[in-house]
Each structure stands twice: as C-alpha cells, then as structure tokens.
Image (tube, rainbow over the protein chains, first blue to last red):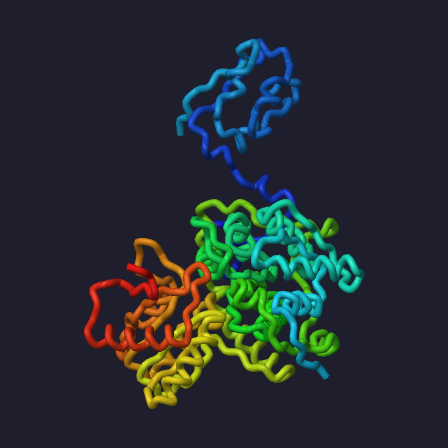
Length: 97
Length: 391
C-alpha cells in the first residue's frame, strides 16, 4: 500500500514534486476545514441550482431527488450557498464532533 | 580543428548557444545583454539555427515561456541583466524546485536606483537563493565554455536544475577577445540530447509546480536542497570531461599563485584579470601574495575554498555588491561563514568596490592588498571597507 502523506520522506517524492496521477486533488478532503455545516429543508427547494453556481468549491450537485446538496467531503462550510438561496432552504449550523 | 578568432564576447556566447542547438529561446532585450539575444534572433531569422525564438513583452514573460518550454523537454535558453532579472524574479524561483534545466546568461549590471547600465554584482546576488546553479565567467572563452557545460550540467539526470552563466556587463559583453569556438561535431559528441524524465505530454498527463500543504512542503524543500548540494560532484565531473574533450580546465575556485601565499586576494568575475596583473607585480617584488577566483557561486564550494587558502594568514575578499545594513559584501559574508567553525583560518578582510562600473586598476588592487594587510595587523571596527569612495 502506498504511504500516506505524513509518512512520505523527501526521498519518496517524485522528481520536482511532479504529480503523475491525473485528478489526484480529488483525494484531498477540504471538508476538514469546516466549522459550520449546511443543513437543508428540501420542502422549500425550487431546484434553481443557484447555490451550486455560487459554490466556490464546486461541490454542490443534485441528489437522487433532484435537490441541490453539498458533498461534505469537500464543503468548507463558507455559507455562501445559504446566503444566496432564494427560498431559505439552507441553514448553516455549528459543526460538533 | 577549432580556430581562435577575435570576436565580441556576446556574439561568441550566442554562437556557443547555437552550438548547443537549443529548441526554444524566449528573451527580452536589455542592456548589456542585448547583443546576445539580438545575435540569436538573427541566427534564427537567417535559418542558421532551427529554434523557436519567442520575442516576449517582458522578462517575467520570458522566464514564464522558458518554464513552459523546458517542461515539455525542450532545450531552453534565455538571457537577461539587472532590472530584467529583477522583473523576472518571481518566476526565476519556480524553475529550480520544478527541476527545469533552463540555461540563462546574466550580463551582470547594477540594480537601480540611481540608474546605472554598468557592471556590478547586485543583480547576481539578488537571485542567490533561487536555487539555480550559478557559474561565473572571467573572460570570453570561459563564457563559451560555461554555456556549453551549463546545458550538460543542468540536463544531467542526477542534476536537472536551471543554470545561470554570469558574465560582467560591458567588461565582458562588449569587448572583443580572441576566442576559440569548438566545432559543431565536437559539441554534439559532448552534449547529448535533452531528455526530461517527466515532460508535459498529453498522452501521459502530469501536473507541475502543484500545491503542497504543510505536511509535505518541508520535504519538497529538503529534496531541492539535497539536489543542488549533490550537483557539485556532477559539475566537477562534467568540467573534467570538458577538459578532456576541449583542453580547458575548470574548477570552482581557481588558484593563481595562491599555494604557499601568506596573503590571498579573492575575486569574482572579469575584474579578477586586472587583479592578477597586480598579483604578478607584487610576486615579482617578492611579496607572498596570491589570488583565488570564484567560478561557482551556487552550490557554494566550501571544501575547495578552505583548501585553496590553507597556507594563508590573510584572505582579502572583494565584493561588487553591498548587503545594505548587513555584514558588507555578500561574498565576504559567505566566506566568513565558511571559516567560522574552522580551527585554522585566515583573517578575512572584506572590501567592496567596483560598484556600477567603477574600475579598479592594477594600482588599485595593489592598494587594496596593502590596506588589507594593514587592517589584518591593526584590526578594524568596521564590518567592511569600501574602496575608492570619496569621503
């Protein structure tokens, strides 16, 4: 199994720290930065997709019911979606362990 | 067989670049580098050199274009000086950690203000910590030889680093010297084609200069440091191969009458040739003096420096730059650091002179040595001496 980032020594790095695996940034869990989390009242959702357009992380997609929802693996909890939502579907709440 | 001809050093340097057969040249003209890139543009325009010449709109763009070109595995050259080097500074830093073997000639010139087009080493010192290998020429022949070696050193798979070849503005760039340009066939034998191990390639995509979070950044920087430190032995090996092929010997610290000398004068760049005439005269007068000339600024040749002054009681270091409000000349500062923890060491006396094109004559160098010896005896409260200033 490949070493995790905190096990890699300088000798393990690819020359010039070149990344040879396309799309590897997807493995980076930016969700760990979050202090607030979006919650949803999907009854109000008109599926306009404005939240997804404004999301700086590009991590909001339609779920199986067609409602727009953030992928919490990447969501940094900035709250822009909650501010932009017309119909007040989204409410930010404190992250608790 | 190569013949010696009288030629302007800038033209000879450009012809040496042509001999290395580069794929891409991206440059912006600036005094005193202009003749180098003009001649290269001419060679490309005339069909004598099959390369892409990118006439960019600034030095920042020049180095950016060089990064992209080198990242595809293309042999890449540029040249600049002074303000141009300062403008491209941000991008200069990027080349070394990305391991791109770009070769750049720097026609050393003072940095503004006040505006000066003449030579000193303030531009060279401003890029000291960019991670490039920095080689300094003392005359036109060295410029030609250094350029050819620079491509081979930078592209060696054990090195893969960008290389700057420094030549003093006007004192070298604009003088005509007898120079031997090697034959194309000899250079082709010496310089294998450029092969970057992980080039940009749509069939095998890679990302370069990527994001490194705190958990890995220190490791990337240590890899860079280990890389340039270990490059010295490859530089020595390639200089030795060059000697075998072309008969001209290069070493990081060139010695001139320094073995056994009690007083040694250290110089860097073209001014060292004037200094050597002063040394000749002082040796003829029976003084125990010698000279060392630094040819490799990064990686800094600590061992070679210590060995070259092992017999000396006094080492006088001449800088053509000032670290304002600091220890004085950047070279002297480095030399003092190299000796700090040594048991046997010479007294190191720091002089700054030759700023913004001010000449130091043979008599001037004799004066510097004389003053240096006096200071070594009597001591000084000053960090350094400035030579020739009107007070």
